[in-house]
Length: 125
Image (cartoon, rainbow, N blue to C red):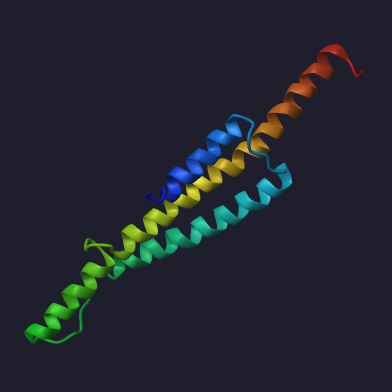
């Protein structure tokens, strides 16, 4: 049995939240959302820095130095399992996580808005 991808896992949690099968306190969800926002900023910064590693120099003019510089460059950008792509995959997962957390406090805001509208129309009970 293959493990499901982290994106699929968080998408399943989003579906469970939409179906009312997953609950999280709105205040806790806001804390999680904030942590996601902060982590996304770090990941984006590191991804931008990783692009700069895509052109390694200073390994000398011998064939071995040139090959090593190319290998390091490809490990940063465009090679198999390169740093930029790995960071992007983390960004994708954290974005999916954040979408789940936002469902809880967005839903709470929607209920509050509906209640306020109802009270405005009908008066307090």
